[in-house]
Image (cartoon, rainbow, N blue to C red; front, side, top):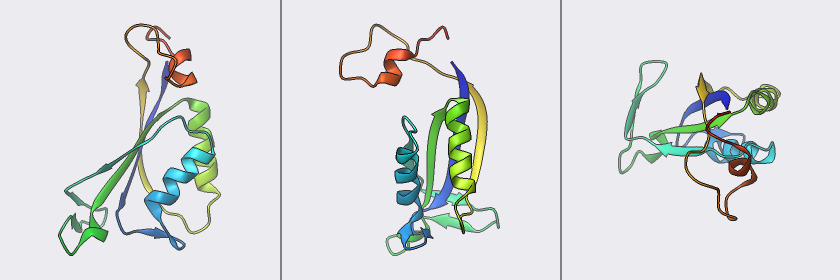
Length: 122
C-alpha cells in the first residue's frame, strides 16, 4: 500500500491546555481512527531554536519525544484537519511518502482488521 509516515516532535513536559501534549495527541489520534502510533523517548535533541534538549534526572520535562505513524492518504487528511482545527496548537512534524504492508503468512485472529486487509503486493 502507498501512504505516508508522519512524525511529530515535542518534549516530555510540553502541555496543550492542562494536558501533556503527547498524551493529548495520542488520545486524539485514537479518537479520529488512526490505526496505530508509536511514541519514542529520545535521549537528546536540538530544537528548532537551536536549543539543546535532553533527559536529566531533574530535567525530565525537557526530554525529546517522537510520535510516529504510517497513514493512508485519508487518515493523513483526517489528522491534519483535526490538528489544524485545534486552537493554540503548534506542533512540528515531518511527512514522507512510504510503501507499507504486512509480510509473512496469514494474520492470526488476534491481529487488527488493518492487518487482515493489507498485503505486501498492494
